[in-house]
Amino acid sequence: MYARFYPRIPDRLLFWSNEGFRVAPTRVRSYGFSRELRKLGVDAYVLSFWDHLAKYDGLIPFRTTLGYRTRLTLRAMMAAVRNRAGVIVFQRPFYEFMSILSLKVMYPLSLTIWLDVDDWIFDEPLTGPDTNITFRNLLASYVPISTGCIVASLRLEQEMKKYFGRVEIIPTFPDHTLFRNANDRTHEISDVVFSWTGTLFMEQVKRDVLFLVEVLESLNDPRVVLEILGDGRYMEETRAEAERVARHITVSFLGWREPDAVPDYIRGIDIGLYCLRTRNDFCASKSPTKLFEYMACGKPTVATNFGEAPRFIEHGVTGFIASTAQEFANYCSTLLNDPELRKSMGRNARSRIESEYNISSAASRLNEILNPRP
Image (cartoon, rainbow, N blue to C red; front, side, top):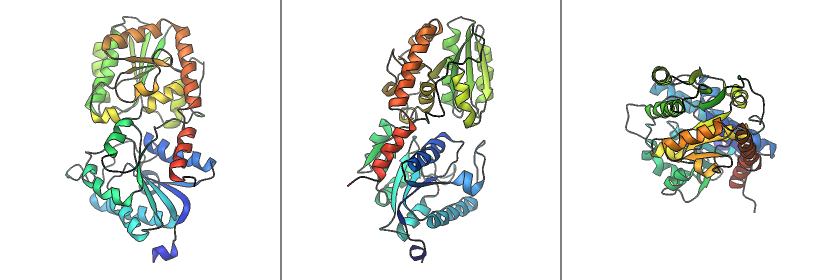
């Protein structure tokens, strides 16, 4: 009945996300890609559980009952039916798998489904923390209903190629028109502001931030200001430990900022920091969104030598890649004491964003994948 009254529109695209605008993957890989594709003439839309169905603000963990999740899933499926999109990009599949499967059963020939996986979610429970059903358990079920899988990193490509015949890489590049280069300084000229942005939601992230505190403290230079932008369950623990360690530098925890305020914030810093010290699949698979945002604002970045960062930082040109704590400290010291190097690296970084690492180029590539030319 639905197939008869709501036939698919082959050229219409729907980005389906369980999360919302306040989460970077949905903001960039759903809303951002949809906006850019519409500029290319694609009829693209977003269906967000948090924004359109649950009216959830995304600031605290979204804990729901099985009954509520079921109702949301049914509402999402009906919204997708009414939207009539012929192509659905199913981002970071979660508990709503049955709705996508049902849609494919209803429209076996006229609906194309792509998975979009930007993070290591293979071992996440899909139906609640008290179950043993994970994304990995259901991967075999996704394969027959999907044309392929879009991923954000080389590590994810390696994993997904075990399951899908077609896997495409599209990193989570920033909107270079929002994250713009700027020479304005909002701090005292004697200060040099290092910045880490992110969410303190895991023990390993707390350790990364404390590593940065220790490295910068080792410089023993009162000009150093380390700003931590973000929030999370480990925020207060990290703050308390940082206050204990920091004797010669200033460490400021700025808390949460709305996504629209982040570009202005980054334009006011001097040096971006990207730190992944835990060598696991989660860190290896992350697309370095914050790195791209630093680069887009014309800031040099010091990053650890793990994961995707070495693919995108040209060492000594757009930033530095450090393999040890001592190297990390040395590179931070170099940038601290050489403002002209900070400026030249920042210009080079912005140039890479303008030419390659931006949302427009990512959307163009996505359009080629979803709408191949004959």
